[in-house]
Length: 436
Image (cartoon, rainbow, N blue to C red; front, side, top):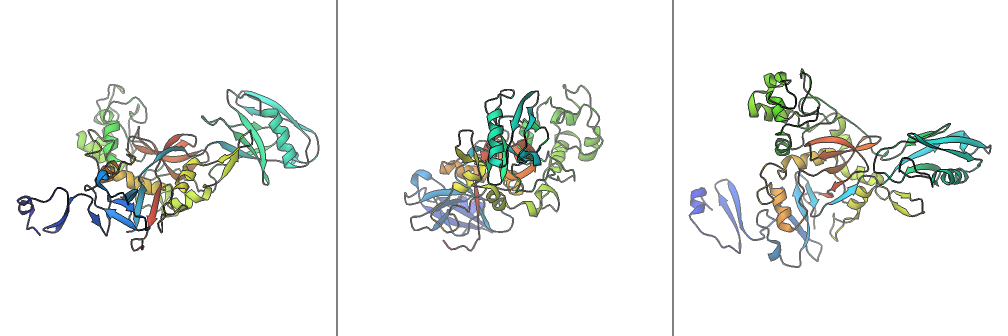
């Protein structure tokens, strides 16, 4: 026990042991792989062969000196309710959805009469003829007509599954929506997750554009950007949907060639400090009573397992996971109570926002060794560094054709087409009194 930091600094401690010191009201952990009972954000999580969890204090982790009986699990993340949220030691880049598909409906599908209709994707089309009394017969006729066709370099297929017939975009690398004359095509991806396109900010503005990391926003938006959302071409007279870059805010943008942000400076202040105040007003409002950040849409486990294990059929008849991001999280598991397969999930939009708000990796001049405590621990464990400069999926749906993600290139939350291959970081939630 030490009276103050000066008293603490006057005494040497072992370089290879574990020492806990009380310095006034604070606790200092020194040594290597110091185990603690009550973990906090940034502490490392391991398990032993008996299925017991062990927490080790951040900044004491030395993976090369960790006893080999311990298996890496992850790192403790921020969690407002007091429970223990663990981010997996590894993340991976996955698609939110592997293909896009539509449900086909219409009385003409199986009425037994002969029909000819046009299936079109943009300027490319093909005539489909069928006479069917079952959905399987209808689907087979459609597949025969469209399966070998190229629609602007893209492939589509048709098949029956259960009581539904699907049109499927098999080369799902860009957004293309077909039409089928006389029949109805209904978008059918992520439909068990409620979509909401408003992530409300501290300034009360909804839509996308909420800054999820102040340090990343400063890094990404300090230069003179050419995009109109970052560099307005007309005078700003109210809080914008998207953050503006620093030169535009200061009225010094060479791209804009004129000052369009005097209103913002009058509201938030002049200079760099005023711009930072403006960026803070653009951050997500949490907790939220409305929009995509509200409680009802913030259960990542519920979102994940609404669609985990769902499958689709390729034109060759191969069954594949429809939602790779969710299946990846669902595949994680350890022989420990609470960490089994089926407990891990893709975080909700709110949870992802809360995590990314404390991560500084991706900021100006930040390295894995000097970043936030979560990044430092992942680095020490030999895990996947989750930088704010990367793009990361959450489990929240933005609209019928896209999901929410944290866009590292622009430092804000936005809706993005499901086909993107971006980072997925599985998490698991434990009660703090859980017995290992």
